[in-house]
Length: 80
Image (cartoon, rainbow, N blue to C red; front, side, top):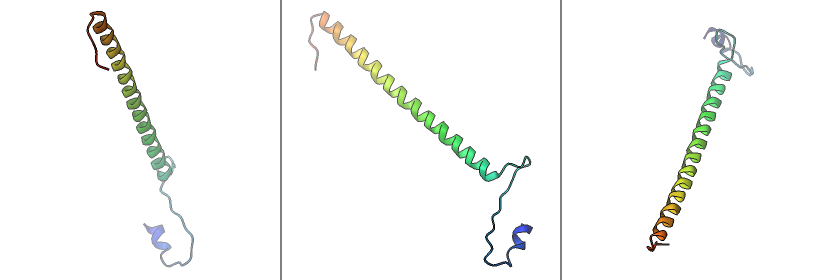
């Protein structure tokens, strides 16, 4: 707070402040990394969900085709 208060009485000064952790890594950079990691996790989950749905659709179509084949083998009719 003190460095910021020191600049309060200055005008037209382009200043920037950044906080760093004990290892000297910018907290802003750390936050951006965390956000990027969260986005990557979200994308992976979305991709996994999409793949699961596609696989389920494929499996259901396969089951339907097998059932239709068995129904036709028994001489019964199926709906189209």
